[in-house]
Image (cartoon, rainbow, N blue to C red; front, side):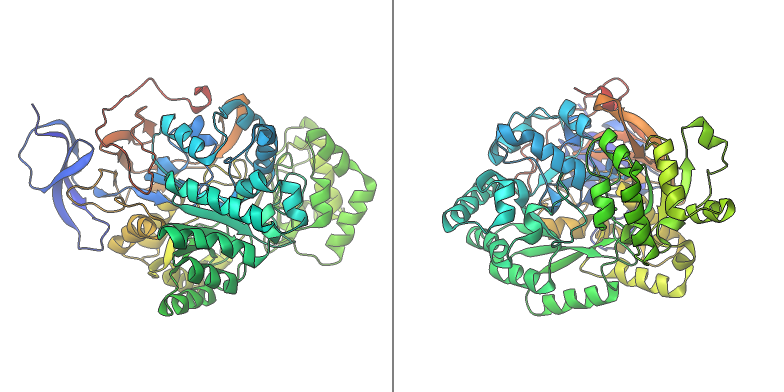
Length: 593
């Protein structure tokens, strides 16, 4: 009988605790790290890691894999980039609790605010729950390729008790508030890690299916803060949120006595292309809060957003009332509205009035590039690879007329691209100084991958690879030991992963083995691997050798072994770590039931 299930032999160990690196073997038995050092014992499997980095698996705190988990147990894109644990239920969005008659509405909301394809959710979600504890049981039953921690999202909780439309018209009654707090406590007892919310106000850019603000966007601060009393009563849990005033978050931290994960700290722009003020100012506020005993962390957008999109699904123009109204509805309704002369005139008037669309980057709509066209007549127009401004100047047409003509003639299928941060801005000393501050700050968590969301627009789930390449190897802004503390240990501490985030004897063997010099991001590609034959943008990487989850090899390079050794982490803990690898045939996510 082998002494170990697996030995990772001779790698350079970065333990995640900011200790100095060292060369050692790691022995794994029963899903946990059994020994670290020079190991002579036998093993059923030996992985030769000489010359490679051996580090704790990355923890992705900001994802929307709530539905994707059911057809893609490995939560790609994240798992392709060394992520071994994810948190779902972010921003107050999710599917539990949910009454049967509200299921379609819940999916419609997620289609608009996080751009998850509706047909995919309809085909892929089993809907074998109503209450939040039943949702947890469903997650427990579902094979998982990564470890999963879940927040209680406030929007479905409020819809369950008050009703979505009613909640947008008035404040909850005392009885309704008491019932929501009771259900939140019930969800926490079932194993949730805390609760989440979005509070972006009446001008929210992540809107409901009917383009109205989300339930929590316009809620009274007193009602939002009241949920914090539940965590205070229980003495555990964390709160994740986006938007809201700094004063509200300070109150939330004070009332709950718990940690806040504040979104976002943005060197330039967040995942929606929006600036949230100077990163330096946000970090200074966070430091001041912690000095006053208010435990607040900032989650940072550490990867630049080079967005791709088609107007079939694009929702990030919702900042603008005219664009918002014009992009409501299904494909045919959108096409009709974008063909309407009156709406065109309103969009042109907004553009000519100097309005700068936040999500369109610093150059606005004129700076958007044409990536591809599908209409053969458009292909002959020499549009691809050029910006709207370049084509408009060449053809002597108004940029909005050109943009809308392309959209309509191509049946909404044209691919566009925009950069939220110009290339020249990314190469300045000032930018490097900001990145150095964000990358080394003890309260800043890298990421905001938005994995599982905006599936046709962005691939920011690759942020761990980008962080190691840009912050560590290329720009040399962060040392490797600190980088792994930020990518694994800090997010575990902040969010309640009770026994993850670093390498130590007795810990679960969530481990990534990679070649730092060989890390490379592959191009973004259009992949048809979602249920209902839907496509998404994907992006893999070179340089990863093995990713182990609870001691089982889940990925060899980019190839998924089919192992589903991940666990639902109730209260931050897994139920059992004694796992056997269950490799299957080559995995095609779209074929998953």
